[in-house]
Length: 103
Image (cartoon, rainbow, N blue to C red):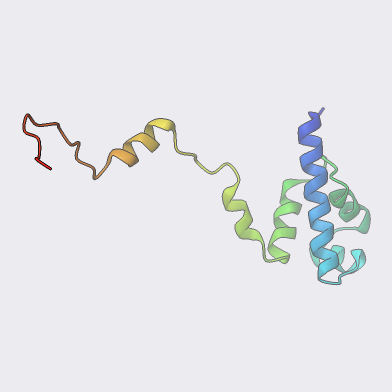
C-alpha cells in the first residue's frame, strides 16, 4: 500500500506523461503502439497506477526524449560535512594579528 504522498507523486507523474503526449498531439493508441504496450496499460500509466513496471516508464521517457530526467533520481546528495569541506577548500583562515592597521 502506498502512502498518500507516494500515490499523489505517481498521479502527478502520470498527468505529466499525458500532458507531454497531448502536447505532441499523439493519441493514446499511437503512443501505446510506439511503446509496444496496450492502450489500457498506457491509461494506467497516465492515471498513476503503481503496478506499472518501471521499465515502461523508462521506455516512455526515452520515446519522449526525457531519459536524462532519470539522472536526478536517487542522485547522491552532498552531506553537510561535504558541503562544509567544499566551502572550506581553497580558503585560508585569516588569523588576527597583534598589529592593527591605522586608519
